Picture 1: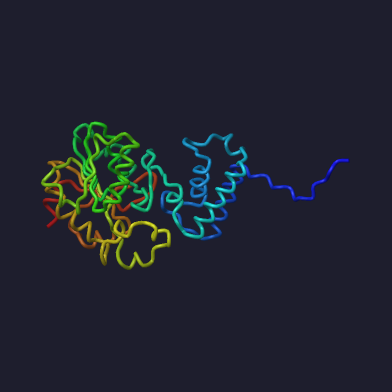
Picture 2 (picture 1 turned 90 degrees about the vertical axis):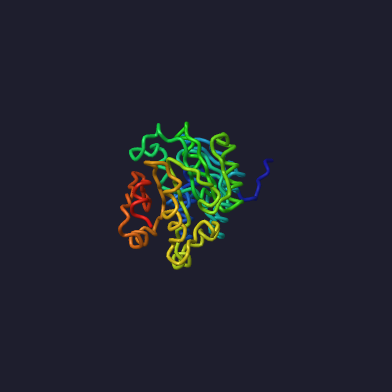
Length: 304
């Protein structure tokens, strides 16, 4: 006689598509903040799930019909719960993200790469400069090195320096350089802004410095608490770092050289503080803003 089991049947793990839909709904219900490498619940859930699946390239249509293994389903649920309960950004949970089409390691030693400057780098800083004339580039406040390394990738004849005041961030930047095989052309060094550069000059200086003011720091979503405060806070108005860059950049630029700086939501304060400076505010096809461009000559004429 056939034995009948009275144990409840174990539910089948979901398909990839079902898991993504479930994850996105859970994140939306929890009211988590998106803006650290992803900007919506679907992408946030995908970052976690594709990490669990160890996906190294763009998903094929067939992948979405595939069922997760039980182990994958359990791991995915655990990471979703961690994302919701701790408000830790998804890419800090996975330890990896993408910037300008390049894979980057990321952890709380440095800001999560998300600057719209990536689009400018992918275009080799055109139309603002002839890429062929660019020999040296400085990434000021480099953090985990994403801007410096992407610049070296898209300007293969240029040498790039990346500086930061944080030893921990620089250690992460060097890991990324090794993994991208760019250590020979990208040099990372500790420096408080331009202090350790000893008069070096560059064709391009690019920076995503701290630019969050005191009031805004107090109102940021919990996700930002997992990022280094040193890389965010910039005094009462958010201008402390930007002021140093504007005052000192010209002496470190070659004739015709460019300064590119992200100031995010502090754009209004920058315009108000320096009303006579002829900033060019860049627009990006993929969205984002708060990035200005100045030439060496404009800095010399208009910044005191």
